[in-house]
Length: 418
Image (cartoon, rainbow, N blue to C red; front, side, top):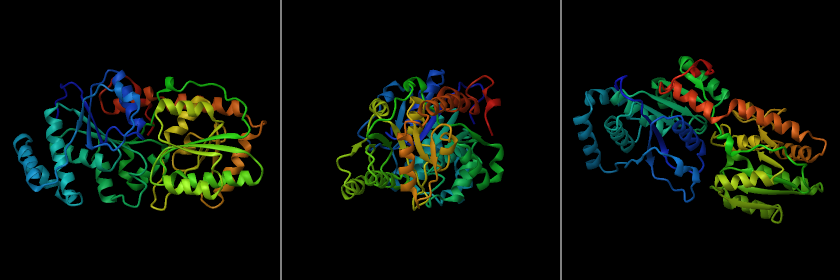
């Protein structure tokens, strides 16, 4: 257990670092470093990304990419080192055994390795993003060292058929605090485990607002310029968006779409573009950096985020790009998956049911509305910016998180919504 007199040093424990699609992690780290906190980053898996946001260069925290033992001889070396360096290691590991047998052996060995490194590096608190591998590792390391941990829960770590509910409940129950990024998630977690009511806190993923300058939207152009951003996976609903554009074309309305992102559905979506005869009006752009994304937001008339619940139960939390568009003055059309209605409302955008049946028709109708010159684009955009400033400013959200970890001072804790 770290001494209260030790200087605060928070470890960020993540599965992959850096990860191109997890800009919210980097934004949060930068905000906490700007507030004077001392952080360190530990990554459990190597990144496979080939593009990186320039903001990564601003991160000061040292990054440790942890090896994952795959051979028994290496695992034994890890356990032997822990036996030497961690008090009561054998007894504490034995107490965890009912949980460890549900985990991959190499993941357990890696968690033991993490525990020795955290203690050696003077870490006083661990913060894990996602209640899956990273949080399970934090749980084991915490049990072996006494270093407390918090976990920010997101989406796939909660809403997916592969989630091990036994491990999930244990990870959440042992955490010093559990962070929900939306009120929807907060209620979900308490419904899952009512005993969490006193430890689940709402701290939203924040934006670095100065990077998204607001300007009133210009009148919608003809053809309407639609932007969509996200990983090319089922839960993003991009196939429905393409079919809605085909519907609009059949009704004589012109629309163009720039789709930013990559993923497993890249080829099927490209094939659907050809099948629908949209080749001249749809561009599949692949991944884009944050700076390039700001340019895409500037050139569009509307952002479409037609999220759905995947066949495997996977669902989005609240895609960061929705907040980025709202901050920039770009109107948003989105669906009511999990936390999205906490940002997109009838006053700050157009919110649609995420039910798959009839989604193409609802999307087409919403885009027709956005294209209508009588639709109050400026009023909606200003209301959206106001909401983002009030609820999603990373400076404020990161202060709340730091306060929960006991690493900051001030009176923000009292403001943290339960």
